[in-house]
Structures are given as structure tokens and as C-alpha cells.
Length: 149
Image (tube, rainbow, N blue to C red; front, side, top):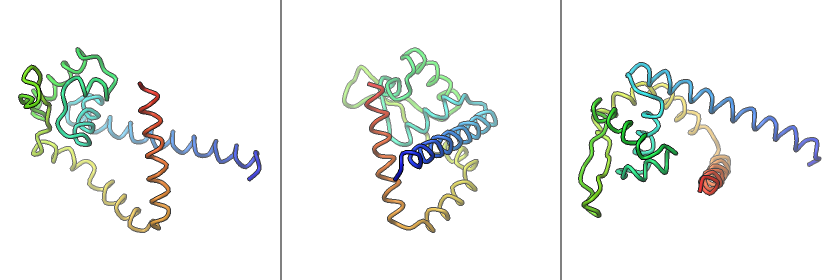
């Protein structure tokens, strides 16, 4: 592939990924506004959904927030009933934060149509393409994680 074609593909990719990220963030902000949460609160719950129960320190590392910022966020989420703090069985000096699944269902309702469309799109996407995208995002997430350290 020529250098010129590579530049065009690079620019198109960056444009499309930025467009996708912006749309996702803006939609998540609308959902957060509807349920009376902050966008960061929504992302914290996303992290908890991906990782499972986590300590506030782990959440600080994953979100980039200070430990004080995580405490304030967890206080909001706990007061709204989205998370609970439980004793950490591996360290009695700390707690684990866990999502309350019954509360999470109300948030998932906002994503029903999006998830339905995504499922249909993925079902129609050839497996080799899915494998390529999975490899790509695996490398991107690793790069991002390593850059943050």
C-alpha cells in the first residue's frame, strides 16, 4: 500500500473512532442526566460491571480519579442505591464496592435498542472480521493501559 493511501486510511480511522467515542460519551451523558448521576458515576459502574467487585483504590487506578474523588463518587452511587460497600474478605482494612444488580437493570433499559442493533450487526459480521476487531481492540486496550502506568 502506498504511503498516501496509508495516510488517508489513518486519517479516516482516527476521524471515525473520534466520532464513535464522542457519540458514546454524549449518549452516556444524556442517560446520566436522566437518572440524576454524573458521567463519571456511569463509567465507574461500567468498570465495576467489567471487573466485578473492586476496592476504592482499584477504582481510583481504573478511573484516574483521586482516592478522595472516588470516595465522593461512591457516596453518591451508594446514596442513589447503585452500589454497596462490603467488607473485603482478603483485607479486613478495606472494602469492596459492588453493583446492586437490581438497580443496574434500570440503567440497562436505556441501552436496549442500542444493544439490540449491535447484536444484529455483530450477528451479520463475518467471524474473520470480528476476530480482527477483537485483536485490534485487545492491542489498543493494552497500549492504553501501559501508557497510563
